[in-house]
Image (cartoon, rainbow, N blue to C red; front, side):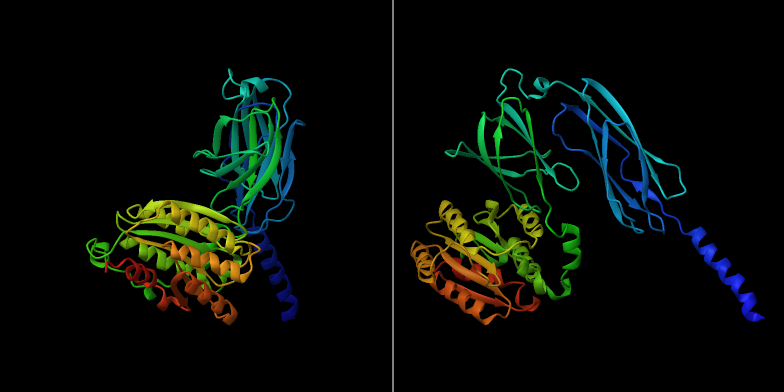
Length: 433
């Protein structure tokens, strides 16, 4: 008899729990203005949403006009999970437009209305300069969010024989004269995979869009999973105390940092960030520091920044994220070039390479490679190596490199080793004798 009475109670609890479980869709924005566009290839509007309820969320149906294209993942979004809806109008008539898209989900709430607006203009009107149709606009956007990527570095090669570099602005845009012809274009920006592409630019194209792919791990996620206990880190004293100008010469430092995926293991890269941050605290106005990261290829993040620009240096260091495989020889070539440009005749000229020793690339024999390091050392540019990990073969190679570069090999195994190691290295090499 007790068992029979228990069944209705369990059924009541089951239905009660399901009644309380409810998905909830919340958009960060519900309107998007395309501005003035031609009916060309331009990025879709991106509407990010999250499931703020306590049950799985699904998009069941989208009501829209036939001239609107809508894209989204056909799946259940778990509580707290984020998603994205991409909307792109395909309009044939010139003039202002307003379109509403109705999003219907398995939530009990009313459908959500997303609104897109803009103005379709002629292709000629899209050119930045109506009197010179060779002035075009280049727009760099995030492949996932479709948002602008600010300050991306662009390297153009025109018709195989003329190269020039430029930089996008804070809106991810670059306006400059680009003639008709074939281009090779390399694009780099911190937090994104480098992009290499070729294209033929026609007379009728006023705007070029290029998408950059975010690195595998988002910055926030990577930083969250790689926090080091700050209690183990002892901040150094001020620069006046540690590097008085009357005792220590000017420093021309190039930091060459391995950001291949192997540097993610055992928090190697995070340990290095601690050492660099401490070094930055004591740099002076007579010191200069450059920063190059390398994995598949080198990326120059800072070109000889003055030691007083501490926030700028720390920001660049903070945004280093492991990704890709190691090609160290290319990175060293770039480092020596930067060191030569800012050479201090009466100061300390030094490259500090930080790696776990998985050093490859360049197609050089070991003997040729060591000879290059020896040659630069004779010119007054030392190479020191900060080594991570316990690979004996890698450690042997790093020690060899430091010896050929007339610098020092410093092995790092845990956070206790790291806090002031770069400061001590710079002091030793810049001491006025």
